[in-house]
Image (cartoon, rainbow, N blue to C red):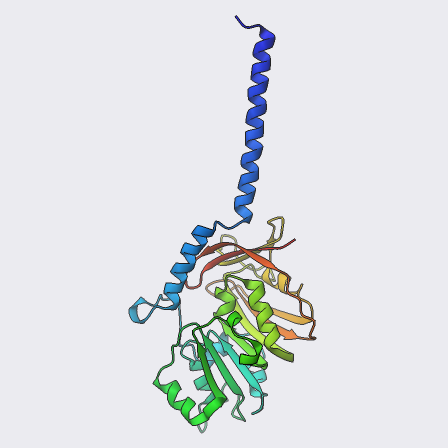
Amino acid sequence: MRSVKSSVRSWKTVGIRFAVLFVILLQARAGWSQEPAQPRLDEEFTKQEKIYRSRGADVPSGYVINRGLPNYAEVLPTGFCDALGKLGSSDRWLDIGAGEGQAILDYYAPQGDGAPEKCGGSGPKARVVAISIEDRRADRWKQQAASLGDRMRYLAGKRLSQYSRDELGKFQIITDVYGGFTYTENLSRFLEKVLSLLEMGGAFYTVLPAVHLEDGTDKLGTWYKTELVDAASRPIKVCSWLRQTTCTKISCESKSDWDEPTQLIKIRKACSDVAVPRTNLVEYMAGAPPGRRFQLEP
């Protein structure tokens, strides 16, 4: 029969082994929460590509491709329509995620007699570039573009990051209404590209649904579609992250009474030395829009 001391030593050894195993499991769990499981992410990216390429009855209900300029006026930050109306014929506007380009068609449509002043005014019109992953142009776009020549351009087949600055040029206004900013897998790189395309003093107008609001008025229990956390996995509000970007002036309007807590965002470029805090994708779930979780680099 083993001695009592021998039994105690055996139990101590088992206890130490369990403790070591527990620490290893905790470390592994921490790693899983910070590093994306690439095969699972690739599967979600494939699902998302099917949404981008969907047609007819296959287009998900949340994937809207025909928003007009009145819709832009409703969901973009205060002052967008006035800023658009101040553009001259030599200025340029870039619309990311333009879909069918309906907002641009509305912008160029003549002002009806006695009609209320439309968003963008009735004065001289800027040159406009529309970007969409898929070519969604209808006959109306083609007819209007034929009469305006290169004042209306539609680019499709590539993501924003795949265009060079020489291909696109510079812009006084860039808009994104539930487009790339809501769907991208690389938030910091997307924003960096947008800011590189802005003229000095130019502005980026966008909107982000289902997020933690800057003013803290979002309701408990909300399912957030875009989440940011710091290196220690603590929640970060999107506007707090944006304000870490150098050479920019950020303004945010919180909409807690909409169907989803939504942040209206305006970013003005103040100088050329722009640096965007880096984010890494840790979770992604395909959808319209997708669910995303980003972690800031230390």
